Image (cartoon, rainbow, N blue to C red; front, side, top):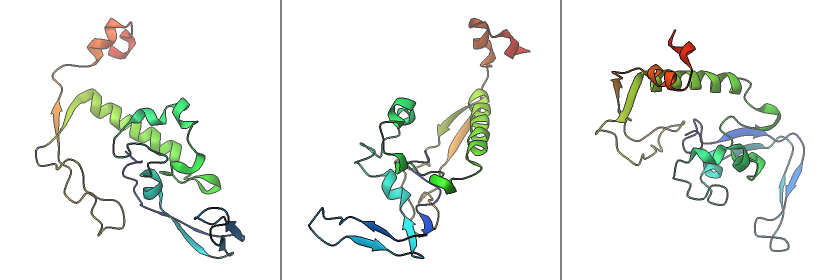
Length: 162
């Protein structure tokens, strides 16, 4: 989800040393682009995350894109939900762990479904600094009448039932 809808649509940096990019038109087809030290740079992670060169069928939510074998076949800096490089988010691992725990709790205890008021596919509101859906995202939570722990006994995981 952070690929399709990153919290911030762009990252900012300040260039620390001069850097020359080859011409975006191709070698010998235009001037190279020089970025001087101190230049403010905005990197569109939203644009990278929606580039079909890196993410074919980019509007499709496909968690398999991030399996180890698929992650290794993609260019290094094409997933920037937590930034990358020496200034990567320090709380990345802790944040991912907290989200996984919260999701596990919700999935374990509730059936979650889109409410009829939610418009699908989502449209992004261009008036906000952070990515926000144009319309609200309405979800219905239904308390499970059965416990998923019952399933654990079938697989010899009785300890989880205590």
